[in-house]
Length: 441
Ligand SMILES: C[S@@+](CC[C@H](N)C(=O)[O-])C[C@H]1O[C@@H](n2cnc3c(N)ncnc32)[C@H](O)[C@@H]1O
Image (cartoon, rainbow, N blue to C red; front, side):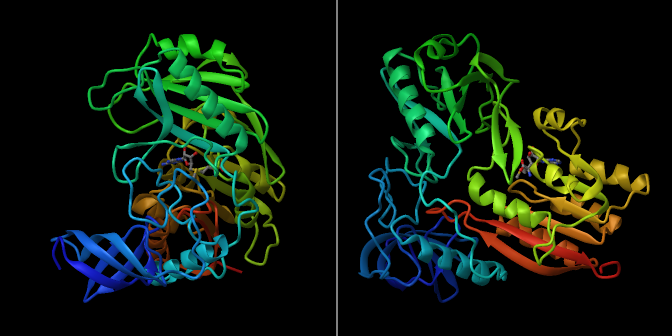
């Protein structure tokens, strides 16, 4: 297979970016805009020499999926060959949402060897995103508060984004207009010049907290915008002077209003600050949280001691405290750790310290970031050998890696469930129930 080849392909599995993938004599051909179940014509753009993988551009749809529809969002290139300035945030939206869930499940089975059963649906198909990080690009007088097209740094508009909560979409529109009118200079990552880099919006379903992330101080954006913006109930400012993609910069400064939103998750009120983590879709995440603190039959765990690793906003800590006499959270991000009343500490160091003190909990709950727990934390968990271990993960790849270590060292996977946390995207959340083979009930 070579660049330029025109192939007729039967796409049979969903790829990691929401594209259709077809296996051709041992090579996996990824076709953005095509979906599993479709026959397409696609032109090879790149064939890897290192891996059995190729990327091809959708040329024509020979046999469309019966659940295909025009993408509901006008900015999207979902279901078509990529368009440079289109938004690629929701690549599955040209399919009915129930079919999206079936394809995600099938991909977990085929690509990861995991079968969680039917995905738990999101209560909201649109407007579900309560936390949205936008990238500020454009030119003086024409500021864009949007995103990058997938796999590139080409700016894409996200005006009236349909998956963002309506309060966030309105606040982003207002910021875009105000930044343009006030001649705020968007940051230019190629030269490192400019002012406003990112805008991070969070909502509690009514109010909006906006964090402006600028490249340096002083910042005209931080000085001028707060007086012009009417929608956010709080505006904070953080300086990120690094050249990478990290959004979180220096400790935030409050520019106006309240620095905190209180979001109710699974009945637990959670305070979220300017740079604090908030599940993007809390309404489905709370279903996963409830499962994370219960056994695989749905009965809440109880006992003397539980550890809550990667505790973040503390929802699971609060839920666990309903059933356990003592719950010890662990969190590395200082803002979140302070809110939990603990010192910031990485999970690996926390587990080593607890183990040295001879403290073995009945249950360890883990909700690691995208990269998963990794070998060092898994090795500590194996050494701790708590009877029950429950993991919530937003990355099937990372979960498979962590499970491989844990299952090879005494843990058995009792159940797996998946949640459609971000409809129209390939993302999902997983909860895994494990028990220690020697100590489990
Ligand atoms: C997916 S979030 C889970 C948050 C939490 N369960 C919640 O609902 O808010 C992952 C959390 O792990 C924290 N974290 C990342 N790496 C860590 C580490 N090595 N040790 C402990 N916490 C870590 C992050 O700061 C973040 O709060």
